[in-house]
Amino acid sequence: MRIARYTYDGDVAFGVVEVGADGDLEIAEIAGHPFGAITFSGERRQLAAVRLLAPVLPSKVVAIGRNYAEHASEMGNDVPERPLIFLKPSTAVVGAGDTIAYPPSSSRVDFEGELAVVIGRLCRDVPEDKAMDVVLGYTCANDVTARDQQASDGQWSRAKGYDSFCPLGPWIETDLDIDDLRVTTTLNGSVKQDGRTSQIVHKVPALIAYITACMTLLPGDVILTGTPAGVGPMETGDEVAVDIEGIGALTNSVVAR
Image 1 (spheres, helix red, strand yellow):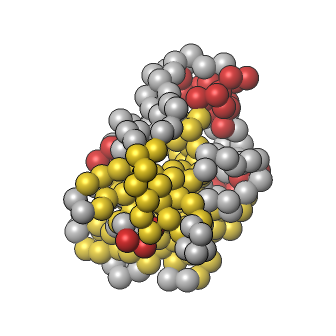
Image 2 (cartoon, helix red, strand yellow; image 1 turned 90 degrees about the vertical axis):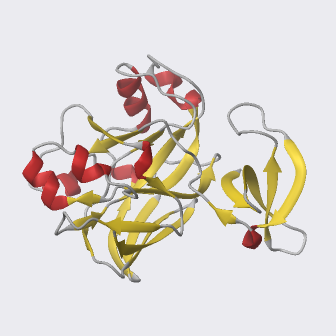
Image 3 (cartoon, helix red, strand yellow; image 1 turned 180 degrees about the horizontal axis):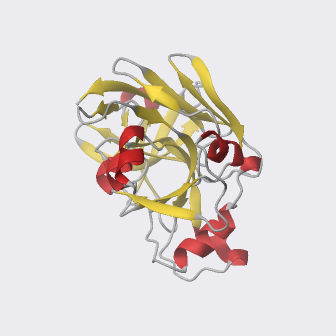
């Protein structure tokens, strides 16, 4: 099931993206939210008639650094023995088709395509063997980073936390085997990152167990699982797309803030 969040005539709703009778994509409106038993309002619209938003508005985004060995190496680091976690603020989240705002305080802003895990229910102290029970589904993410500030600050909050530095979308895929999916990032149509989720060092169940031993996760919270090798800079006017097998493509353009 593909769950999207969208706006139509000024109203915001969740819906399930389906193929209609004529072969076009439609969206069946959910009555309320998708966290729990899903019921439908009866409203159906053409997907092309609505504007997709970020599929969730998380209370927090928990991101994992250096979780692909080749990416850690290209940045001159080893893979951490334990997951390296950091937070991105909810105000960094934007959706597919929204713009990434290049801040004037940075001279280098990078793309980082990632698989994102969307949490489906309140959870704390989740054991690894129960971790997948708290997952609603998966979406594409771009962990946008002011690379110069990441290096100069010594910690990552500013470099990772600017408004628009966490595009998510286009929707949440709930029925997906994430063990070995292709993850690509293109810049103006040219492939820059090309990895697979099988290369993730600390796997999703271990990440959920590790994070929830520290903090409570709420429905709609997001875990970014790390980025493959090939990260690089973007400039204003560029278009960047993160495409994950079985989910779809998250596309954003870069503008001056």
